Image (cartoon, rainbow, N blue to C red):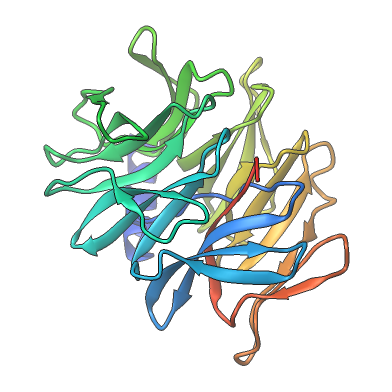
Amino acid sequence: MFRFIARLSILTVLVNLGFILVARGAAPHISASEQVVYVASVSGRQQLRIADLTRGISARLAPDFADALQPNISPRTRDLVFASRRGGDAELYWLRLGDSAPRQLTDNNYDDLNPEWSPDGEWIVYQANPGGIHQFFLIDAAGEKRRQLTFNETDYARPSWSPDGRALVYDAAGEIFVYELASASSRALTNDEYWDAQAAWSPDGAAIVYDSFRGGSWNLYRLDTATGLVSALTPPGRDEQGASFTNQPGRIVYQSVTKFPGLLFLMDLADPDAFRAISVPPAFGAPLHALFGNGKALALDGVDILAPNWLLNP
């Protein structure tokens, strides 16, 4: 009874904070080339943009799209998939970087959200709610092959591939689960009184990092996949979330939502206390700058960064 009441209280707080099942954006992915695809909030509209931190330039992608969401880059090609509500319902679109006209992948009267490319670049997993409940689907890059993966009476959200492409980590009803594609079965990774969400698998499969709402704020936790042990990565009260593993072993990039909006952090999991900021938020209308080890700063047009997704294979 205590656990039920505690989780109900957490759910009430999340609703009051405006937490929505589908609203959380894609987490950042870093590359050695220092290129990033991101969504920028400009005058209340969500623009899809790309920035090259090495050359110090940024440009808008798909200029006709003013309501882009959750961009995700293929690990094998320069193909981008993203969601957009330009027609009302959220649909999926495919874009080859360098092109200006996205191709629509889905066309229906319900939401298709949180797309992510498979490790081999052949499939895109996403969540959709054709029957009013969010489940997982697969679609190919051509939009010709599509199949439903899960059939459940509980909303499934934010699927993310395992490194070998055999499983998905996701969140449902405030817990983290793994879905095995071969057996079409799920198992719980967390079972606590907190609200857990938005998990990401490490490239070596040894760890899963996820968000957990505890003590009135979101913070990051690490789960050891071999032992099941959970450890805190960030202290309470800072509202840090949306972690993704970089292409450098053992490193994650994450966002600080409430305390430092627009600010990105880089952390080495071997020493969680040794995190550092890699961008600074806008102040008094000043441009937002991205700062990296080369000491260069890139002005990103004075807008807020949302859902950054770093190119793995530019």
